[in-house]
Length: 213
Length: 213
Image (cartoon, rainbow over all chains, first blue to last red; front, side, top):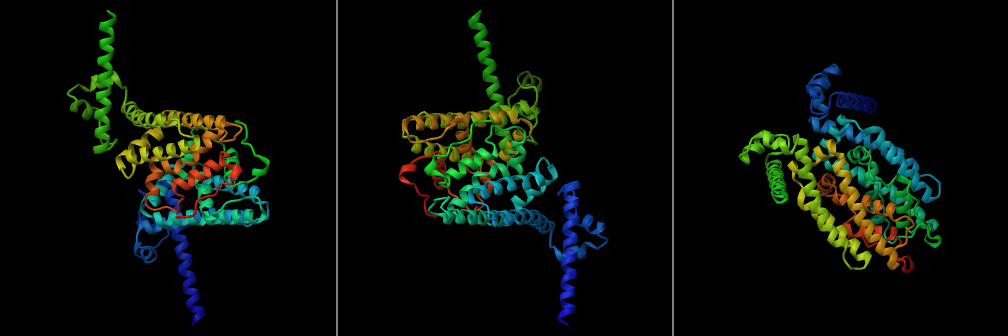
């Protein structure tokens, strides 16, 4: 009986995933506003009622799409955060990967921006969770840096939020795309130098900001 | 002759200002998309052709509205940047004023967001100029801090861009409003503490980040 029940759960999970995959494809191709739950159902050869068994609204489907995209970024970054590189280099690698992961998914894609705008507007709690999880990953690198003596901050939780906030320009889907039109800088490496200094890295050796490129 | 010519210029300037003022009022009230050049002309009891003598498109009117809003913020901040307070305190006051000036104008106002989105999308050069002018103001405070020995950075221009980029969350019209829904922090004062450290402020006395509130 338990086996049969698990199997039904697995099937439900699989159907759920198929709905999310189809929705993401349509959101990318036609945009969130123009995609209906009926369109998604039709593409999967199921009834809208069946889709509604899994998601009670298009908003809920969008949250699942957004969660999956953000989850992919989080998984990629978690590997870097858990690495063994010295904390300053690890933080730089983390910042670069965060930038690239978001640029790859969202940059210059107006339908992805539409999806993100809807998520920001209607499902802030989902985005909030993403920010918190990334803060926690940065916090882990900072904690390692405190243990190794590379960093010196009194409140690692606040510091991790400051680091993340300093990188908004390099990872927020909309800001990324705006800055891609040509912005006055800084480049990511200069920003990371500045952040490392804010974390007290190398204060003994008076680190310098890089010259402007 | 010169007097008469100046006076015509002055009248032209005044008409231009009236168009911008009326446009801003309608953009705020009905939104950018729903406002037409004909609506603006009608409210001013002039012909659309006359409006087009001053602005060749609605986009050009929007740029003038955006430039005026951004110019007000710049003027307010220029006064603070030129102040005599010690550079670290002046930078904190500057950051707070930048936050408040933007929050007052844009926070939670969906029609103002529409206007800003259009400006970001169609008139990036105007926004770019605003960013550059604010960078220059921050650069002035940093230069004073280098002279006073409060700050130590090798490249003040890059540092000023890093400071400004660190504050995106507190001054970008859209991000401001998103974060107002409740974000994981940091608060502005913690962020400024972090930035001051990035500028090498008080490295001799080992400044600490504030405890989480």
